[in-house]
Amino acid sequence: MKSKKSLDDLCKEIKDSTIFQMIDHLYASHQFSIKMMCNLFQVSRSSYYAFKSHQPSQRNQENKLLKKRIMISYLASSKRYGTPKIHKDLLEKG
Image (tube, rainbow, N blue to C red):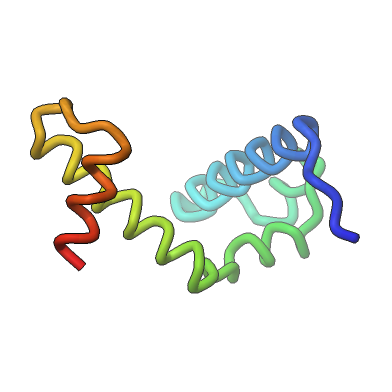
């Protein structure tokens, strides 16, 4: 059975992604090696490379598109539509 992530796990993920983005930036500016930065930030190089090669799932991509369409509908209504009207609007648009 898959358990829910705890708040600590979520904070760790956010922290790691921020660290990995910093490593990307510093490496791109040719200031430091990836090995040295991973040691400095106490993250494994394999985790860094896994982060770099991660592709979002089909479901994540669909959710991102849906969120964008929801926001467009909400803003088009001058921020007046609630959930039922946004749902109806999205259904009408397919």
